[in-house]
Length: 320
Image (cartoon, rainbow, N blue to C red; front, side):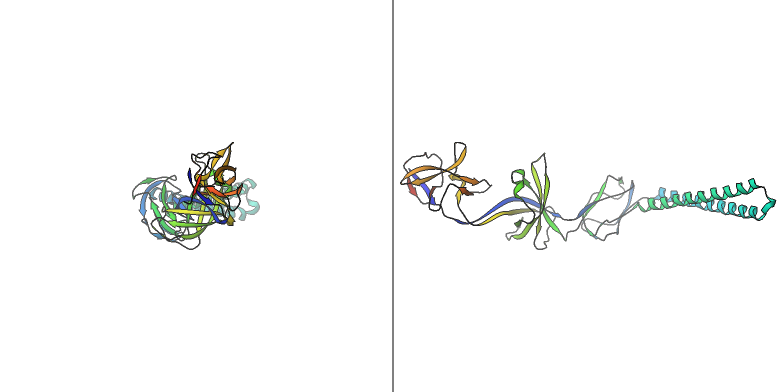
């Protein structure tokens, strides 16, 4: 029976894990309001660059302004009452022994009560000012308005995501790795990245490896950083080859050469025109060729496709 063979020889080997990911911003934030109401003003559109602290939207604050004015009026009245109570206390003290002790104590109590009321009203004014400031929405970071999810006049609440702001100066690739390879991935590993629509590749590295596997998907979250800054739209597909291991010399066999004998992997080698089974140990990996850890030596003649061939069968060798 004619069989295709190859001579097993050591050669440089790079073990890679191929995954698909998407461009994401390293730093991004969803902007929400701290109060509910009607959106009265939108100062940005998608694609605008905003500065940290800059105004991006306003909520109708008419009712809150009325609350502030009421608090200020209450504080003014409390200040007048405090001034009157203090003046009464001073006049009572000026009478000296000519005033009853109870009258002095009552004047002191009234002044103290008036002071406490001023403090309370001052706190209410401060609280109303703080609440009024929440009706003006400011950018929490410098970046680009990536998405805008609301329209002018829309009623919103603190759960509404108004917009997403991202720093497009620092882009990364986010992907998931199957849990079968979770223990193989480490931060700092090199990676070769190719953006969708490009033929050139870019150098990168693994910048983050999650310590938790998603129980629902069996995926491990991994982030890849570019060696050089890149300009690309968020969400763009990226093909990544993560370099797991590099060896200067190793024996490899094509996956088609593998068969199972007594529950363990094996290959067929040719010895004096006869196919012989040879148990092997391989590093199982999602690749067309696998590294052989044990079982073969340089110079062995390997049958590259073991399908339909039995141990002890006479074969005629053909180079593929």
